[in-house]
Image 1: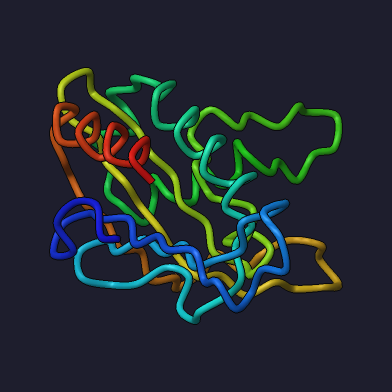
Image 2 (image 1 turned 180 degrees about the vertical axis):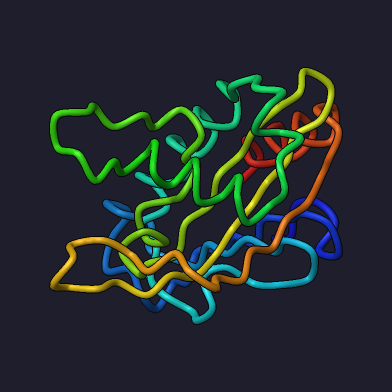
Length: 163
C-alpha cells in the first residue's frame, strides 16, 4: 500500500505473510519515500503492530518551530539531531521532531518533521555511526526533504488507519 505522493512524501507499508508465523508482530515492510528517495535505503523487517501506532502518534503531535522550519536543510537536520541526541549526557534528549520508526533508527536512518502550523517539513538521512565517538557522522551528509500541507498529512494518517 502506497500512502501519499512518492515524488513528495509517501509511506509504503505492507505485511509480508511469509515473514509471520502468527498475528503477534505483523512483520512487513515500512518505507518512506521523500522527494523520490527511499528510506531506509534497503528493505528491512518492520514490526508493524509496534511501529505504525507510534508513527501515527508522532505525526499527530508535530511541533511548530518557525526557526527550524525555515533553516537550510542540512543545518536544520544537524541541529535537530543534536537536540535529539545531545553529546552532553547532562542534557535531556528532545524527541519532539524525531518521527523515525524503530526499524529505521536501528539501521542508522533518521527522519525528522517540523511544522510551521500550515505545512510540514520532513527531512531524512542515512547516517554513518562512528563507534569511537558513540555518535553519527554529521559532516557532508545528504538530506532529502519534502514539504506537504497538514491536510495531506492528515489524509495519509487516516489511510494508515485502513491498514
